Amino acid sequence: MLPDYHMHTYLSDGKDTHEDMVSSAAFKGIPEIGFTDHISIKPVGWAMEMSEINTMIEKVNAVRKNDTKVVVKLGAEIDYYSGMEKQIGELIDSIPFDFTIGSVHFINDWNFDTDIRPYDQISIDKFYTDYFKLVQQSAKSGLFDIIGHCDLAKKFGYYPSFRLERLYEETAKIFRKAGVVVELNTSGKGKPCAEFYPSAVFLEKLAKYKVPITLGSDAHVEQNIGQFFEEAVSELKALGYKEIIKFNKRKRETQRI
Ligand SMILES: [Zn+2]
Ligand SMILES: [Zn+2]
Image (cartoon, rainbow, N blue to C red):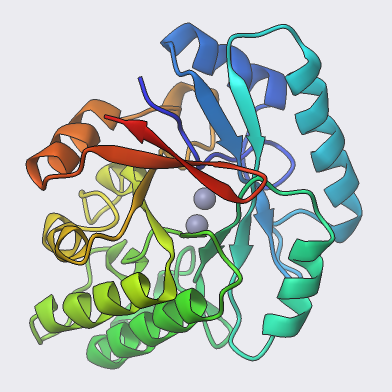
């Protein structure tokens, strides 16, 4: 099994403790995990309070000290907000991260990841254009090691009237130029879109531009750690990927697949 670099505990919107997550990984034979509870500069209910950041660091250090076969990394899934790069950067620099995931969950004040009501009232074409623009900006910001679920706009199965290939190609090129890693997030499989983030077509573009990949289950309960990884790895191999990325104190390492 391969490292799982995206999961949430009770500290943000997950359910289980750090200990639960580590024992589940050990049970499943996953050699390394990265905790990535939500951090958001704008206060939102499903993210950690700023005062909980120290608890996050302590919890991760505590499970690291336990004698276990699982290597534990400190990450976070951080909301990207256009125009707030400086504050986000200062916050990141104050935490001893192994890696950061940058995610776009908001278009203006709309959390399109959890609030499904507006989808029927908006232009889905504009939504996709706005979404990908923000994702591209998040990559160019230089704040994040990994770009999270990079086509989350499709989560609830709403698609634009135009073909997405051109937008995927443009975004893949920007990822490459920005030097970011992109995660293959397997959680989309269980959502209405019923496929990984990114989609197979988008992943093909990422492979074309040699954008490196991490694997993440986005587990919010311990049972989902490492979910669908076998399928994800065969998809990567079919596209010519020979390795995935791991991080140590924000430096990249590779692992063969
Ligand atoms: Zn997310
Ligand atoms: Zn997540």
